Length: 110
Length: 196
Image 1 (tube, rainbow over the protein chains, first blue to last red):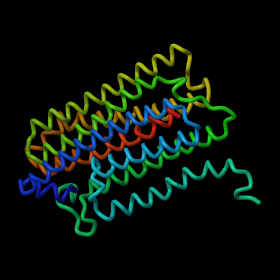
Image 2 (tube, rainbow over the protein chains, first blue to last red):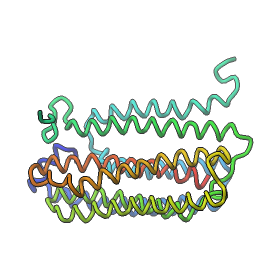
Image 3 (cartoon, each protein chain N blue to C red):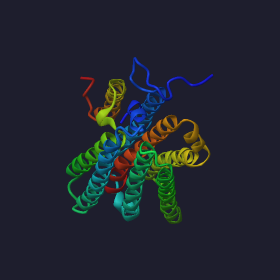
Image 4 (cartoon, helix red, strand yellow):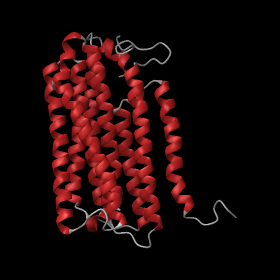
């Protein structure tokens, strides 16, 4: 699905591949819709905040992964893209963890 | 001078320059939205009380916007798949659909914002609304930016299809990556702001 594949696919060699991918896109679309309904339905139960956050995040991560893997073709990308994203992911996690640890007094300074 | 590696891939990376460029840009976007999400966590965990999103915001409208944006991601990827099948007219239909769905998202957002403004719920009202307007406003600007790029490829930019279809297909793929990223950000914004 990367650009080098685009060159060959446009010659018609991989027309069947594209048809297969289109079927996957439709399946992912249905899955995303179902998961959206799940997210909204679960929120109506008014779960305790920690549990609600956990459930909402898990569903969002699944939905995000589907978009990234299939619509953005990350499931079959080149190593350089994975390397860039791994570095980005590490800094992103640091960004998310930083505010959490700051509210725990004495976590860094004893 | 022609831009190198727009059609053929570089031997060392196995990618076109455009593909690397868009992913590096998206990496910077992850950090931009990441910083704002971190701000949200910091403000929320530091607040003595925090309102549930559904008590202040319109969940049905936001759910509609989620459906619109996910649908637009599908039409976007189908637009690219149409080019891969050498069906230019089908590409135009799907790309047009993507642009209209983006417009639909912004119209719904306009109604949401209007309702808040009439209620006097403004960014300076409280921290929840401040971070809500910041995150959704920035996201809305991204939707607008994506629409401009998509409209270019639907309209004047489509001339490239006649002279260099592979390059055009690669450019549409890169525009799609940005559009899907905007969808991905909304997938996290929706529960964070509206449902928790």
